[in-house]
Image (cartoon, rainbow, N blue to C red; front, side, top):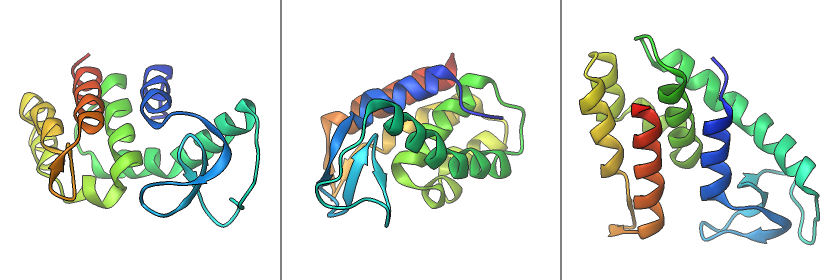
Length: 142
């Protein structure tokens, strides 16, 4: 499967668009919709089309991971939510999560409820992550 427009919209909404490179809270040089890598340089500027292209390219590896990790049939909404989750937290977090275990055990409601547990950074609940996880859960259940 490939991510759909609803998934892309959710990622864009929560990542935000920055057309000039900046250092994110995690200390990484970032541009566009959360793009990092050796190609990002201080002072770099891009336009919205380039930001979209970078996002779509970045998402390819998360699409691949979700397709490989999930053993049960998925709706487009489920797939999009999982790609958004993996894009934010990494495919390793998805791979080791109770969310994935419940989904692969065909407990879709239980899996959906797991999204809301991933709203902390450095032990603190963050409103932005709570909103993101709620959006992913809603998309997952759609």
